[in-house]
Length: 299
Ligand code: NAP
Image (cartoon, rainbow, N blue to C red; front, side, top):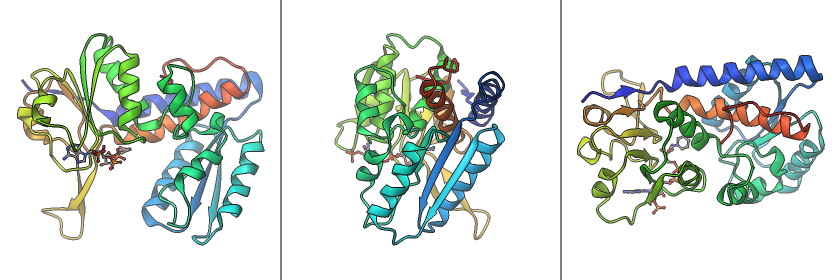
């Protein structure tokens, strides 16, 4: 079997198109412009690249983008003062602080300071709790993106065996909750799981989010399964000196011979994350104003 390649780049463009349409309606019908504020502490080059991409895509869909760059030695008090101001600002519907932050700051305390209704990264304990209780909140962007890809590829997932490898708060746990909401029978695997290959082989839906390049081999995949590869490992490019190459957690060549559908790395899950950040911001804006949420952009 040769798997269908799930094109996350194309799907993310579709999501951004839906967001842009909704933003236009909010502006024309209600005079509201959704706004996303990004707080960046320090000068981490990778973070600066992410923040620039977020800014560009926010503006492209017609939303307002607010950037707050703070020095690496900013005190917690000064950072919280910025977050408090954004929490109180009615033109800001989504707030995210780009992680990692310098060591003297505690990421959990930073997330906890953001109003959960504006926590468009979905990382707060409140939003994690709402998801776990099956209530309406904001869902972490990458798992939300994977859910959208799975719904598009499979449709009804009820009764399917889903295995999520990785149990982080950022990805593994919310992904498992979302699959449970879709009525999958969910297994969460992690570094202490026995016979991981065997566990993976049971999965109709296999989601790998570990960060170990090509760990999941083709013979770990059930024939016909849908495989979502979240992992990203950067290695030196074998053919282009000085360049790097991205690898996923799944050995694509062998897995794509067995799977029914599979996301590539790059071009699979990656592009969905910012698209879902924009989707969450428009959702948060609609909720703040008591307006109908865009269809298909929420869990
Ligand atoms: P993380 O917090 O480091 O969690 C990794 C998880 O993998 C942990 O639960 C760990 O288990 C598990 N693990 C480690 N070694 C394992 C092994 N040998 N067998 C089975 N499980 C093992 O990472 P994360 O933040 O969830 O991210 C995971 C990967 O996804 C990374 O490559 C990251 O870059 C990528 N990612 C991509 C996006 C995107 O595309 N936008 C977004 C988020 C994450 P324990 O809990 O037992 O330690």
